[in-house]
Amino acid sequence: MTHKRERTLATAGIARVEGEGSLYLRLTGEQVDEVRLNIYEPPRFFEAFLRGRSYREPPDITARICGICPVAYQTSAALAIEAACGARVEGPLADLRRLMYCGEWIASHSLHIYLLHAPDFLGYPGGVELARDQRAIVERGLRLRRAGNAIMETIGGRAIHPVNFRIGGFYSTPTQADLRQLADQLQAALDDALETVRWVAGFDFPELTVDHEMLALSQPGSYPIERGSLVSTDGRAFGAAEFEQQVIEEQVPHSTALHARLAGSEGTYLTGPLARYSLNSRWLPPRAAAAAAAAGLGEDCRNPFRSIIVRAVEVVCAIEEALRLIEAYRPPSLPNVDVTPKAATGHGVSEAPRGVLYQRYELDSAGTMVSARIVPPTSQNQAAIERDLRQLVQVRLDLTDEQLASECEQAIRSYDPCISCATHFLDLQVDRT
Amino acid sequence: MTGGAAERVIVIGVGTEFRCDDGAGPAVIERLRGTVPADVELLASDGEPTRLMETWTDAAVAIVVDAVSGGGAAPGTLHRVVVPGEAAGRDGAPPPGRLAPTTTPASSHGLGLGAAIELSRALSRLPGQLILHGVQGEVFGYGQAFSSAVAAAIDDLTARVRADVLSVSAS
Image (cartoon, rainbow over all chains, first blue to last red; front, side, top):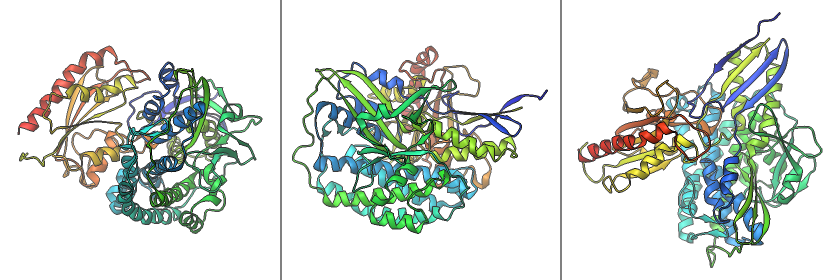
């Protein structure tokens, strides 16, 4: 009879919400029996909270789901409601949305690259230790993050929970001079971003190739950010309105999060930087494309650890796009278009920094919301992350529990999972029999 | 403090109003409005460390209000900690009163107040004085209602924060 043991091995950071952030591994001899990741609570509370409210409220309310990617939540919400009402936001208003979203990508990716992911490759326990030893490098990351925040503040009014964004466009639009003020900062940021790609491309990457189907938006002619239709590496192509027919979410016993799979497939799928890049690398703007090539990225990238290079390339892409949009900007005659409520259902998708973010709203004729559905990237990726951890652990069974905990944390960090609205820790339990 | 208009005093309430007791920090900020000198900045924050650091970098005094968990104190217990300044914690020695480990969380969503303090210390961006006020939370799930313990403590917490604000503003 083997002795069964279970203990908590690692905690990182402080938990304000206990019981969420946990990884459970059950190992029998040389076999990984079970991998349970319980890191994410889906935004059911917000779906219920939105019912019965006005169709104008989702951008403000959903922005509060996530302090790191409020623009993504606002954008998908607005797209869904505008689709339901038959309104189209185009021209400079659409460009301003893309520009604001670029700010979010720059800020979110820079935070992840410099304070979360890079320390793993450089042998530091975290970003604080990296900052103590290599201050100039971390200052470069903070400059990049500030440049992203500056875009969000200029267009959105503030970087956290932007207040200027609304259904149909904005409450007010910036002048050309307002945006041109950002250009100098962004030119300097472009140099920092290119240097970031060179820096991370020199890291040593653990071998791991994942074979998930990948799902991302496509905006032919440009790298997908603030809108588009969905495509996959297995040849799927569908619009936002078909999302819930194509993405099947199922309850699993160990998690409050649903596990997602694509219709007609039993396999896992992945959304996020690797998927976006692999499906759209040909649409990168010139500096980002050149940086990707110089960094050794091919047409696609299937090693989650190398996602740090993809994020760095996407920062270059977002800065190039921001500079292009600022240069071309001519203020619209009105800051928003009319959006008249209809009894209808609308769907919206955009590329949050962590991947595809889908929302659906059903309105009645007065514009009161009858139902709401929000599917963030992390809930879609949960099953894929668990499968990758299983693959990773299976070939590392000789490691101590402590080493295993560290490697699993690093792997999970490479996906930058969204942990809903609060600080958490990863509590790893290993059960060996 | 030497006084003067350039001496920024800022109060930051960390947390989210949609996670029950986690909303205590922002709730205190709302209760302080109109009851502290007009030049004291009042701000709600999600606690993302680089944003906290940028906010308090050039402040003479920063007072941070946050809900806390762990440590074994009873729900509703109030905490007050004065964070040691720039000179502490050099050469790897943990400064007295250090609040948080600096190990890396699994997600950029998990970087918190402890990381903000230590990152600021590493980059010489701590405010002149940093005072933390905490209330021991009990319920952190989704929702907008405080636990009874935090609901009972929130006025006392606000009064203590206000007393600190008035004390540093007057000096």
